Length: 446
Image (tube, rainbow, N blue to C red; front, side, top):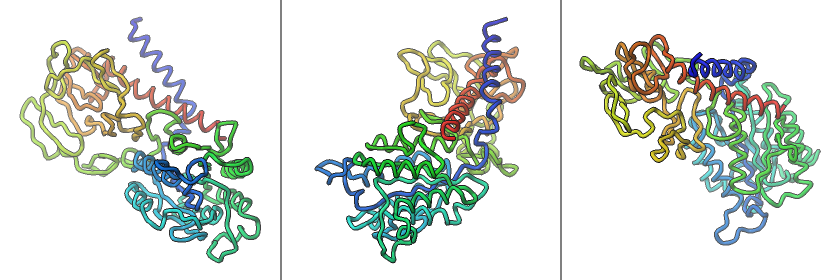
């Protein structure tokens, strides 16, 4: 048996081994709602050590704002995200529901809310955490039984409120602020649909009692930290805060807990499809630009889903150190297309991880190239007879006697060749690895 055949047989077996037991756990359905609840109490004006910021130091609020900005920018359009603040904007103790309701494409609205002068913490602002949890849990946006519901609570200290009539959480006065918050988190988890809460404790000056309170909240929230040392997610630096927030979102979207990856959950046209005559481009249904493009004989229409052009198929090989891309020989030391999130290193002539894709998270149907999530042009391209489309490049390569003349074809409009099967296994293996990471994370959290 040839080495290629052995490799393919092993790859197919590995895909089956990794994938089949956990296919039912993959997030093929709608992505969950994520409600970010941010503490804007007076202590958020301190630095991470709990002291007034020195020259050049950032306050906890500024660090939290930066981290949320980065996170929302990365995941905008990938899952429904909303944001709430406690106490509410312009208040020292009162609470309310969302400043921005959970939804796709809420990045700009969330960034505008973070820049609202009334949201900036003031020294008189208290910490009515229980009221914030209650208000979000009661919001109609968190009642959608068709998707998971999660709260991401970012706080730097113990809940605290007073007998002020502006405090909407009456339990603060009867149970005490800490116990009332634990009860609010528990009740949110018990309601239907259940709302699970991740607790992120931010700041390097948290005392033993505060840490235990955060642990108790996290356990009642149903999403304790897999780290045996904590039930909440500790973040004592800006980098740690961003890491914890990103780690949490990856776990609820099925994207694993480390490195660049894919959001496996989806309720866009990538999963649900489009009306006849339309194609799914950046998760939105639109007309295929190639439908209105007429090409001359010997050419085909290439489209990225937005624009279209007529190009020639690759029917001849290029010289060493180059390869054919959409009808033109271009310099390429690697001589073959690189996989998602990878780029050609001229020094080693090997594909390596693309630094521009570091931290970039795409939908499972997409690929990261040069730091951007792109759709597969092969979805909008019909290659001429005798050629096959190179996935995520859109080059139509000649196929002769069942083999591709040069390069790799990952999506064929006909019977796959051996080269095509080898390329097809690569994304399957990546998907299986993501499912494994998700299963491992889920088992740790359960």
